[in-house]
Image 1 (cartoon, rainbow, N blue to C red):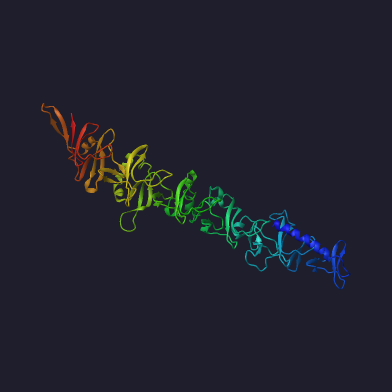
Image 2: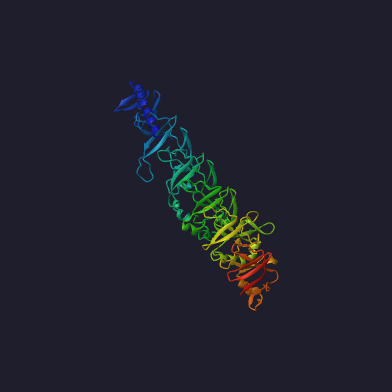
Length: 554
């Protein structure tokens, strides 16, 4: 508008020249100059008052004293006009008029008016019912109140709204007092929200004083109540007041007491209701892809308070992937009930198939807590043994998902560290159980939930007892001496020719029906045939992988 003001000044200068030429000589009627001002006498030689009078191409206004008005607003019936310093009616121009109430609360220093081709100020009709009455000027849209004053900022019912809730209650925004063009597209606006801390505690962009982005349609109305508005190829969300979403947003009711105190946190359906929209400066919704951020206060309060970042993956609708093993770019990843990518060695409880029998290879019920459950190698073995039926059925499966910044499912032979001890694991390379730890006999090696069963280094070899009648169910792994104590006979003594004791031979005759004893070495391989000696000098003979006898030489 400042450019327009300069143009107006040039037009006024031209008007002066024209008026000067038009008012050079007057008779007893017409224009007369009296006491330094111009007046006009009609044919009856009467001074004209409160009316317009034309001279040349210009109109002039005679006030109630008959004097030509200058540099002032003219109210004529229900219309408002403006005459410049030369008294010329202004047309097709912006004019800034000093505000007599300047300095008072919410009062601008000046009011802008626009006067059309007929000299009348653009005004809102008294009968208008809409929030705005738009006028297009030089390709931009403006709105004026019933007095002809250009409105600015948030506008409702034809008037600028100054209260703190104006951004919530109003649909339109018209810039500031010196540039009141209607907002279209993106607009960054300072707002005040005294409820912000209660709605989204902790996030600095949810403080009472905020600077937030809004998006206004071609009609001027703001976008609101959106979760996936596409703008320039990116997805954005807007709350009920039109404020562009930022950070974690959920469709779940935030006023719900259970949500606020954490009672719903960790429930998959609740976590799946969250969308992530980046920062107030960016705001583009995470659509399909990875992002690493701190969980929101309402998503996972304890981790939010820790300030730790986690990897998340959202689908094409922006929803978090929750309790699922998902293939991304040819690799498999797992996500817990909070939507966080799972990393490292874990045991997952899988969801029962809705059709048929068995358990899903994708849908997760929960990640089994490792604290005291499988935090050490021995504890893990005991855990698997105690839950043999659920491992065998596929309800429980062990997986290895790499590091915190990798997280992709690992298959085949892997080294897993439990309580600073390293163990060899084997995870299925293909099939519906791809990635799950092997459980049972495979290539004459025995795995317990993926963990290779090996002899301790000091023992050299150990005895493994399996139940052949129940899919080689793991019974025990022990030293040779302990196996003899549990299942051996008293031992048969064999003597040398000179009568000295040569050795004592034992048989595992106490094995229950279906139980079989195997010898495993420190590499995890089962000894097919021959004899092996352990660290306590017990010699074990195997045939076709099973134990024939045990001898203790003197």
